[in-house]
Amino acid sequence: MNLAFLGATGTVTGSKTLVTHEGKQLLVDCGLFQGYKNLRLMNWEPFPFDPKQLDAVVLTHAHLDHSGALPLLVKHGFRGPVFATPSTIDVCGVLLPDSGRLLEEDADYANRHRISKHEPALPLYTEDDAKRALRRLEPLPFEQCADAAAGMGVRLRPAGHILGASSVELTMNDTTVLFSGDLGRPDDSIMRAPSPIERADHVVVESTYGDRLHDTQDGEAVLGEAIKRTAARGGIVVIPAFAVGRAQSLLYAIYRLKARAAIPDLPVFLNSPMAIDMTEIYHRHRAEHRLSVEECIGMCTVAKMVRTVEESRALVAQRHPAIIVSASGMATGGRVLHHLKALAPDRRNTIIFAGYQAGGTRGGRIVAGERSIRIHGEEVAVNAEVVSLPGMSAHADAQQIVQWLATAPRPPRGIYLNHGEPGPADALRQRIERELSWPTTVPRLGQTVEIQP
Image (cartoon, rainbow, N blue to C red; front, top):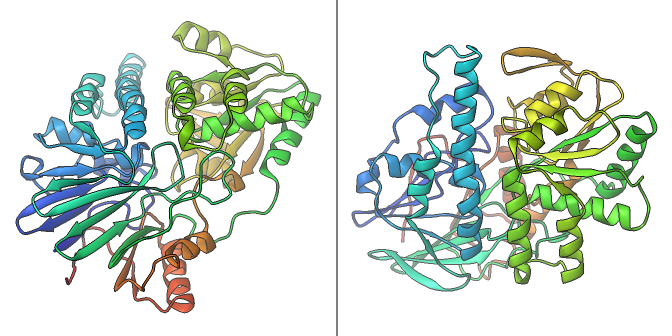
């Protein structure tokens, strides 16, 4: 059995691990590379395997860095099943077509305004490509077993993080390889804690926060203080937010702040059709998270939902104090770019980033202190106050990852770290070896590891 690490190595995006066993091939996750241009360009390269020869795909969850390349895979000939939890399929049903639509809109905008080096600018894939990919998805509920490919049994276990997120337990003969996916936090305000490990001979585990512990500050309180400061100077708060998970956490926090009158009663807008649909899906799948019916309704109704392009354009022209939550979370695309373009130059306004910002993204550069960012071919001054809330991340930190690993009933024979930049990944490697005395490897991009039975 071989594991080929084809993404999310040396970086936190582009998750793809190819499992080969007795002539069969299974891909765990099929995500987009995001962030630095040299990473994004990799999305345009041919897959390092033949999609037509691939037997199956298993998704850990719906975030684009784990699912966003599925339309490309199908476009290039993959015709097998894609196993995922029912709620992940619901989320992908909104997220993937929206991604294709945004890619088309960005290409169209670049062509109309002549801001691309390519003539014409083309989308990586289209909304129709995404819809074709959705037809490959097959539901596999948590804790149920399926034969993903001949000799490859798969079971999905709750991982927290976002709705539907799972760890993938892959069993071949008598050997089990566990893929953590993105692990959630045991103290997350919405999602339940990840399930403990039941069996694992080898573990592939994420390392996004492998070199740090989450800030002990009360993220909700910091958010409230930033909103109050901004309102006092007559400004607007804009919060780039991932449509899946982060937007819901922010809306829930704003609902709680308003409920106890901790912030002024400002109008709140959710300007992301995808995030609006996601919020409704969270309401539909209440059994998977911690929120009561009342809390879920509060989260879903605290903001005015902005769906149409016309409504979005009107909101960009908003100049009265307000709170705007809009995708994407790292400001890599989507409607939030128009808000940043309009609001970043004004010192009265505030930009709040909640959670991890990958290197090379606009969010990463703004948080790092850059005073100018490029949007739609123009340089935009960043004079607004910038607030970072890393404590609102949906990822487990280094200590929480080690604690999750320690739930294994017996020591695995090998640990492999992916989904982390070089520093965090190596720091987590050292921590696991020091605290658990388990052999741990940080694979290189493209490296193939042979797994002994």
